[in-house]
Image (tube, rainbow over all chains, first blue to last red; front, side, top):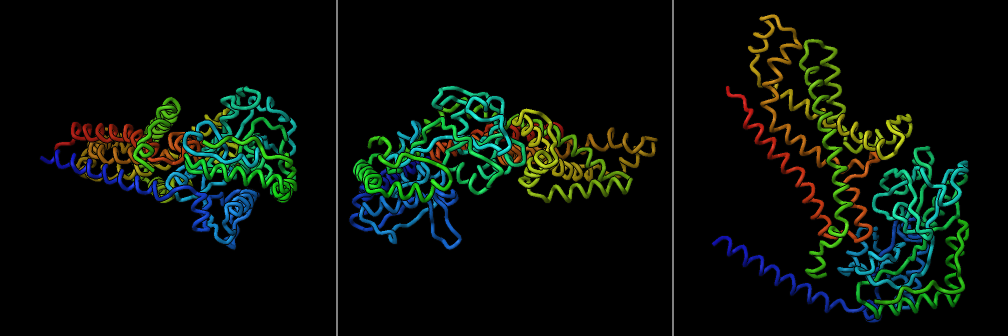
Length: 285
Length: 229
């Protein structure tokens, strides 16, 4: 008897869940339509990444991603003051898109094979490369191959170290490095300066931010070996929004805004990007 | 958001080998820390009941310090303090070094709990037995080793089981000491697939596979070896 009741309860719960989620999906619709109707958007950005997405003590956010988000929102008909900024970390980007917490995610979000089945990507709007950060007085690591046998930071929750150990780089080479686990890139920088590791390797945009902050104690090698395609995360299947976002990115490059933003955020840090045309788009699906 | 997305265990299946390897890291750390803390905890308990005031004081001080410090701080001290600042290098390979640092930190921390459990066990052994042991000419160490501790251990097997279960779960902060175990692998998967419920469930089940048998084993052992008084 008890077993049967339990089964009925489970079935009822399942039906209820399906009903709720079904309705939810219908109501959500496309983000473009939402922008047009409500003139409001919630955009997920990083709050802790200098030059990309950083929340300042006064509560405002700034960075390249933030400026790109403002531009795209503007093209979708949403004014800057009507954008709600939502902190979005690596672990919740997919979830926030899936359940509609974020309408768009612009948070140094690399387009990868593993993420493509989960998210529709607009863009990429910028293609930085993975690079190597070393101590300024260290002359033993100048190229990708020099990393062999060196101690490299392994941040739990970042895939950059896998590009080295699993050969997903432009040389298609696995390099035998000694991994030093750490919680965050901030911790890597401390360990690098303290001498308990030899190199930090991740996106040039992130490394450049640290290099600028640390001054002359560390340097970026400037030997790019991957293409990190920063895309605009959109709920899976929202092709209409994806096309609109791609159009906005094309406009951003053709009207000179892209050059202005790159000059503002990355040129002072010594990073260079092609500002004449947008990167090749991923394609909406 | 639909049922399919809620129950998609695909990421766990695709990365099964990596996940197993990460749990093997957890098991190695837990086993070694368990053995280490059992030894250190017994020594500490002996110190705390010894007739020498200096030893008693030192034992008490150790317990006060490490039982009341968060494990994350102990592990961070092992990594940033011992290894990075004082340059204590146990191995030239950083991940092996991280493993030993994590083991040291976990052992130091867990030993204080093992000691206090054991001391509770020692208190259940009637005082007359220790007196009888001394009166037949056994030294303090001999009476502890031959009479008191065997009975004390048998009384506290179940509480020790709880201490070890807590320790297995505590390994999830070992990343602070620079060691990559199961919870670090979970964070890694969050980066690729997002923090989805199946990944949480998978890792929770993985930990239960380790902790449940530990609990059953200690429960069985405590019944089997119970002291009949």
